[in-house]
Image (tube, rainbow, N blue to C red; front, side):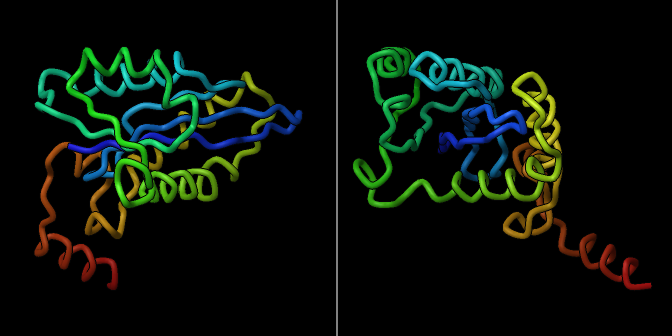
Length: 174
């Protein structure tokens, strides 16, 4: 089990800067939890991890590898103390592991350019509504990398059915 955590910046039409933090599941690419706020901090990151951990319910794995970047919102005493109480091991991309956190960077790009930026964000008050709707659409959208399954389907353990997929393609052509 591996998760990725990252933050990205969004701007409202009223020129407010907001930080969108996401945690995604590596295998399914499903967005497990998110937060949008005018600032980021260790407390916000801790809350985000708590939400993601709560979302997995009773099927909690023995260990989760959390891959983050080197930002101070991810690497501080608050987050470290919280993680000591969980089965989550934090790795800093390009420091503790040789690879980057490109998996979540790709999700950020898709989320922003295919969903969020299509609906202007008037102000910080409307941001959670627009972002929430965008995340719902993202998690329910078929992905090529998931053989046409959605992140939600993949996360829920649905397997790709090649015959059903071929039938849907044939029906779509007629």
